[in-house]
Length: 470
Ligand code: CS2
Image (cartoon, rainbow, N blue to C red; front, side, top):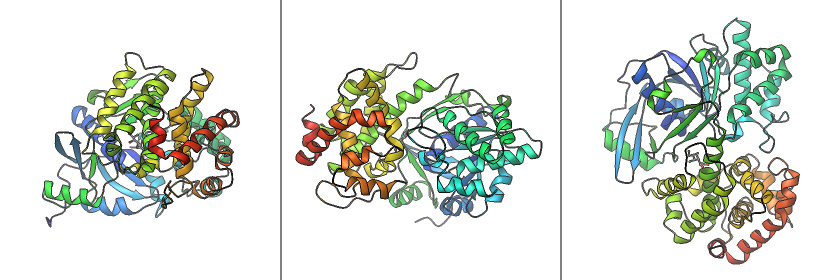
């Protein structure tokens, strides 16, 4: 084991971006693009990272000057990069006031976010702020927030009170119309606190939507040892990622102030909707389907799923028969080619992306990943047995025991409610009754096919159920 700790080698850059939710994904995606954009065209776009809850990232990155290693894992080789765009890390739970001051700094032009689907405190089925969410109740009552919408609103309030310009809010989470979602929750919360503030935000703030893509599995202890051997120093927080990356961003920033992202391959567009739908339904929709059905088939990772001919055939048929027919491609994009590229990315054996990790937070993911496709297909009279099986597999997964009776550690903000419904006498009916996930009209249309899919899974097992579709 090398003794020396990784340290900053590039000079610090003034902070222009505060990023909420400094997880592996942003560090392997946005932070790298932003660093490249600064190298290409300059600009004070240093990033101040904020962890909302955990102290881990701060504790790991501070001794390294905010820097870390990104290890790209291709099917035939590896590339190392020492990423230095993150200048420091704050922990919101420890010192919310310091985070608000950082966000209110006049040098900050952009607040970006990767806080996961549940971080927006919205109702997944409607996209509106959940005003009964405990964090939102807290943030309504005090000026030192805990939620991401709370930090955005209270920081904008400080800037408004100080006569400063607003900042652009750049959401990088896997939600459809993510800019509209974050705008909606910010305006709903601001209006409940101070209607004049909401009017100012509405007039001054910008919320471009984005589509983000790169597969970045959670870093495992063995990855840390491997990176140490490669770089000859200790890095407590490396990120490992696939070669592919894509970022499509609506070019709507306050005063046009942003890093020169277009210079480093980010697609700057007027409207991101079709890209978002394509990515959420083709990639994330099949990722979640493979996560539940793969987990129930005993597969640990997505690459393991793809090495199993039954799951390989299953995912290809999801793309060609159920997802592509329900999508409008972005101009100039072939969905068949996109599916082919996804297939190769999933099969990359160097990427150990656990089905259990992707299965997390299903209640927040299913609507935009799978239910939208089901709805479009039902309206067109197209059957979608594969996606029904995927939703039924989620219904089994969330009961907390697999088909052999072995326990599953279910991570989901609604986990206790899901478990209660999933272990009741009528699991399909009870889960379809959760209005946060299934709108009523859709629940009614899904009921019979889901009952059938659920029974097939229970009676035949996951792999046999997928084989019956071939
Ligand atoms: C995955 C995503 O964990 C998950 O739910 O589907 O994190 C996925 O890897 C990324 O969206 C890829 O861009």
